[in-house]
Amino acid sequence: MKDTIFAKRLILISAVIAVVFIALFSRAIHLQVISHGELAKLAEKQHLKKDGAGVDRGVIYDRNMEKIVEDIMAFSIGIETNKIDESASVAKQLASITGINKKLLQDKLSTKKFEWIVRKADPKINDAILKANITAVSSFTDSKRYYHYETLALPLIGGVGIDSQALGGLERYYDRYLRVVNNGTVWARDAKGTPIYKMSAGGGSAGGAKSIVLTIDRRLQQTVEKYLAEALQNTSAKRGVAIVMDPHTGEILAFALLPHFISPASGTISENYALSEPFDPGSIFKPFLIAGALDAGVVKPGSKIYCEDGSYRIGNRVIREGNRKRFGTLTVADIVKHSSNIGCAKIAEKLGSESFYDYISKFGFGTVTGIDIPGESRGLLNSPKRWARVDTANIGFGQGIGVTAIQLVTALSAIANGGNLVQPHLVKRIIDA
Image (tube, rainbow, N blue to C red):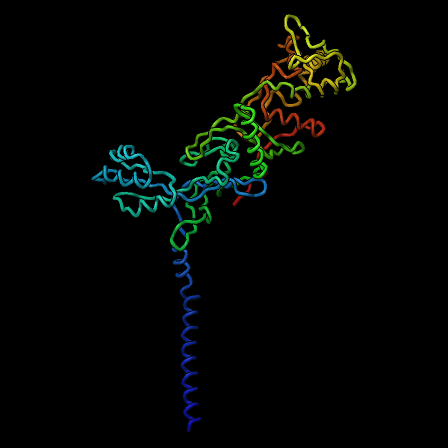
């Protein structure tokens, strides 16, 4: 009897389990197959956000594919001023949230048209304004440039304006690749609805923004900027330039200018004086004279030159050694070693103005290097027909000629690599999404 009751209970439990299993299986089939499309759309709506058409800019990487600059999500917030009754109270609310001057906001709200309150604001400001529930306020998804290492290499990178237009530097030079008008950008959102990263751009007439990979090494750039800053402080120099270039390829590994006056947020771009401002090179120009004279065969390393005991007259001009030094007879090698102005002046006279001009032209002086960034100067190099005898002598030790920092490092690379004039460049390659 007991066995019969137990068997009936077992059959009943098995039946219940079977019914539950069938119900769960049916629900799974319904969720995964029948309702898959509908649920996928719901999940996408919850976790993805697509904004309206706008401008998409590509990423700027260093040579090791570390992100230097990229677009991040921002918000532009505007207001229909003709729908506001109490502009003073609205201005007060907005000022407390945004930190914008209350008087400036009141002036905006007094017009009878649509006005931007803030462009490219952070999500926190956007959320605070929306929570304030101010009449006639609209929020639009936007994007802004984010600088992972703040001011690192900014004179090279340049900046963009409020509408993502390129204003200078590499942003401007490669703007045709970096910038594209898109049909909407998809942003991934977290559980609270906060945008966390850009999934994709909607594309546009140019097929999507491309990104650029720099020749710059981020770590080396940081090191160079650090030591350049220390050098300026220790010497009380007004400004300085440091360029690290691979002499065999022309790749710029680090390029520092200090100080610089660039604000990416406002689009303020200062001139890159390492490219645009020629200067008298002084003694660092002497190796180019010696290289030309040796190549032309007018002197040898052991050739002896009388250095006039520190004072050499050419017409009504007197050339002297630096720091009032005085040398007698020196070999060409010793002229380089002691950086003798008079020795170099005499070698320049031996080489002759026409030949000297030809050699320094081959080193790239008097013309642009072709580096891939706007604003490069040709420098200052007059025709040898305009050189007096003293001009030839002065240029021999780096006076009476104007060169740029990028010309100088490129020319020195030609000496370092065995005589090949390479083209300096800052971008290694252009890549798509």
